Image 1 (cartoon, one colour):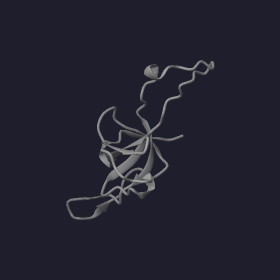
Image 2 (cartoon, rainbow, N blue to C red):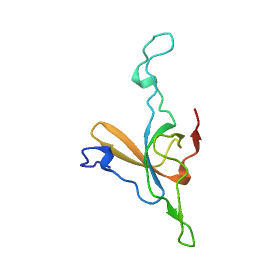
Image 3 (cartoon, rainbow, N blue to C red):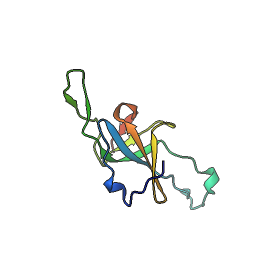
Image 4 (spheres, helix red, strand yellow):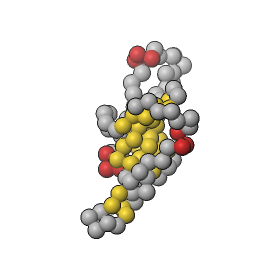
Length: 104
Protein backbone atom coordinates (compact mmCIF):
# COMPACT_ATOMS: atom_id res chain seq x y z
CA UNK A 1 0.00 0.00 0.00
CA UNK A 2 1.64 3.22 -1.13
CA UNK A 3 0.46 6.38 0.58
CA UNK A 4 0.96 10.08 0.03
CA UNK A 5 1.76 10.69 3.69
CA UNK A 6 4.59 13.09 4.38
CA UNK A 7 5.15 11.80 7.89
CA UNK A 8 4.16 8.65 9.74
CA UNK A 9 3.09 10.87 12.67
CA UNK A 10 0.04 11.93 10.65
CA UNK A 11 -1.26 8.33 10.67
CA UNK A 12 -3.57 7.48 13.60
CA UNK A 13 -4.67 3.83 13.95
CA UNK A 14 -8.38 3.15 14.53
CA UNK A 15 -10.03 0.81 17.05
CA UNK A 16 -7.65 -1.93 18.25
CA UNK A 17 -4.99 -1.43 15.59
CA UNK A 18 -1.32 -0.88 16.44
CA UNK A 19 1.24 0.82 14.17
CA UNK A 20 4.70 -0.75 14.43
CA UNK A 21 8.07 -0.54 12.72
CA UNK A 22 10.22 -3.66 12.53
CA UNK A 23 13.61 -3.41 14.24
CA UNK A 24 16.39 -3.74 11.70
CA UNK A 25 19.02 -6.37 12.42
CA UNK A 26 22.60 -5.20 12.68
CA UNK A 27 24.59 -5.86 9.50
CA UNK A 28 27.74 -5.96 11.61
CA UNK A 29 28.76 -8.86 13.86
CA UNK A 30 30.14 -8.49 17.37
CA UNK A 31 33.62 -9.08 15.91
CA UNK A 32 33.22 -6.14 13.52
CA UNK A 33 32.57 -8.10 10.31
CA UNK A 34 29.96 -6.59 7.99
CA UNK A 35 27.36 -9.01 6.62
CA UNK A 36 25.79 -8.74 3.16
CA UNK A 37 22.13 -7.69 3.06
CA UNK A 38 21.09 -11.08 1.66
CA UNK A 39 22.25 -12.85 4.83
CA UNK A 40 20.56 -10.45 7.26
CA UNK A 41 17.20 -11.89 8.35
CA UNK A 42 14.12 -9.85 9.16
CA UNK A 43 13.47 -9.85 12.90
CA UNK A 44 10.06 -10.40 14.49
CA UNK A 45 10.77 -7.59 16.94
CA UNK A 46 9.12 -4.21 16.42
CA UNK A 47 8.69 -0.86 18.12
CA UNK A 48 5.15 0.43 18.72
CA UNK A 49 4.73 3.90 17.20
CA UNK A 50 1.00 4.53 17.68
CA UNK A 51 -2.00 2.75 19.20
CA UNK A 52 -5.70 3.12 18.45
CA UNK A 53 -8.22 3.90 21.20
CA UNK A 54 -9.20 0.23 21.51
CA UNK A 55 -11.95 -2.05 20.29
CA UNK A 56 -15.48 -2.46 21.59
CA UNK A 57 -16.72 -5.48 23.51
CA UNK A 58 -20.15 -7.05 23.04
CA UNK A 59 -21.68 -4.55 25.51
CA UNK A 60 -20.26 -1.57 23.60
CA UNK A 61 -17.64 -0.73 26.22
CA UNK A 62 -14.18 0.36 25.08
CA UNK A 63 -11.42 -2.24 25.63
CA UNK A 64 -8.04 -0.51 25.60
CA UNK A 65 -5.03 -1.99 23.81
CA UNK A 66 -2.46 -3.98 25.77
CA UNK A 67 0.52 -2.05 24.39
CA UNK A 68 1.52 1.62 24.38
CA UNK A 69 3.67 3.74 22.07
CA UNK A 70 7.35 3.10 22.73
CA UNK A 71 6.88 -0.56 23.73
CA UNK A 72 8.94 -3.28 22.06
CA UNK A 73 6.81 -6.19 20.88
CA UNK A 74 7.10 -9.56 19.19
CA UNK A 75 5.05 -9.73 15.99
CA UNK A 76 4.19 -12.60 13.65
CA UNK A 77 6.51 -13.38 10.73
CA UNK A 78 3.69 -12.70 8.26
CA UNK A 79 0.54 -10.64 8.44
CA UNK A 80 -0.37 -7.10 9.22
CA UNK A 81 -1.04 -4.38 6.69
CA UNK A 82 2.13 -2.79 5.29
CA UNK A 83 2.23 1.00 5.03
CA UNK A 84 5.10 2.61 3.14
CA UNK A 85 6.05 6.23 3.81
CA UNK A 86 9.03 7.36 1.77
CA UNK A 87 11.69 4.64 2.03
CA UNK A 88 10.46 3.36 5.40
CA UNK A 89 7.99 0.50 5.82
CA UNK A 90 5.58 0.24 8.73
CA UNK A 91 2.90 -2.34 9.62
CA UNK A 92 -0.57 -2.15 11.13
CA UNK A 93 -1.56 -5.10 13.32
CA UNK A 94 -4.62 -5.75 15.46
CA UNK A 95 -3.86 -5.77 19.17
CA UNK A 96 -4.71 -9.48 19.47
CA UNK A 97 -2.25 -10.34 16.63
CA UNK A 98 0.74 -9.11 18.65
CA UNK A 99 2.46 -12.14 20.18
CA UNK A 100 4.26 -10.65 23.20
CA UNK A 101 5.49 -7.49 24.86
CA UNK A 102 9.26 -7.36 25.43
CA UNK A 103 10.17 -5.96 28.86
CA UNK A 104 13.72 -4.68 29.10
